[in-house]
Amino acid sequence: MKKAGCRTQVVGKVKFVFPEDLSWNCVRCGTCCEDMPGDIDTKEKRRIDRAGYKDYYEDEIPGSNIRMIKKKSGGSCYFYDNKGCKIHDIKPITCRIMPFSPCGYDYKMNKIVACIPKRIQEICKGVSEKSRVDVELLDHSAPAIEKTYECLLKLEGKAHNLNWKSKIVKDGVNKMLSERFL
Image (cartoon, rainbow, N blue to C red; front, side, top):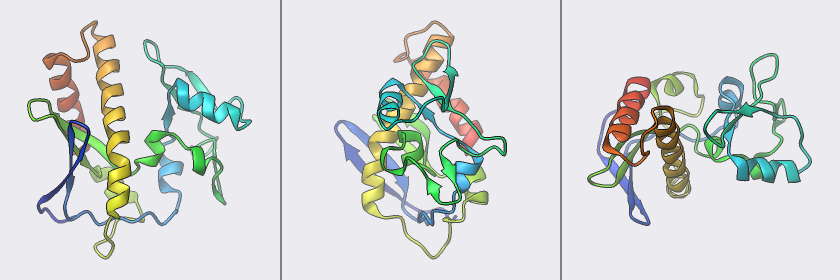
């Protein structure tokens, strides 16, 4: 992907920054589902349970209300098959925001930086120089990215017995995200 300016989307009091030259369009290839099943919180689990699904998640991550969706023997998501996602209309936030990820947070400016991680750029069939990201998708993704970032802060705070809103927790999460994704 080329480096260029940024597009800012404001939702509530939070600014979301997306690279302006994002070149991605979902081609429903299943790469995300095959490579990295999502996680769910309690509310998402109840929604999926109400749809009639059972035994699709791992044990809760200690100190959180987050559970990972089980992987099939081949590594793909429990809900993914050759026809696509079985729960597409009710899929969790982590799945809805793919391939975007929070890559950093400027808490002084209340700004979340979103990106498509390098690893995803390499394997995602929807990343190309010829397609443009739909602005509505970015608008839809912004609140989900905020929730994902908040979950990361809470997990990090809990792991170190610190307030998840503290500067030290935010700095730690930002460092981890930049090392992992950028």
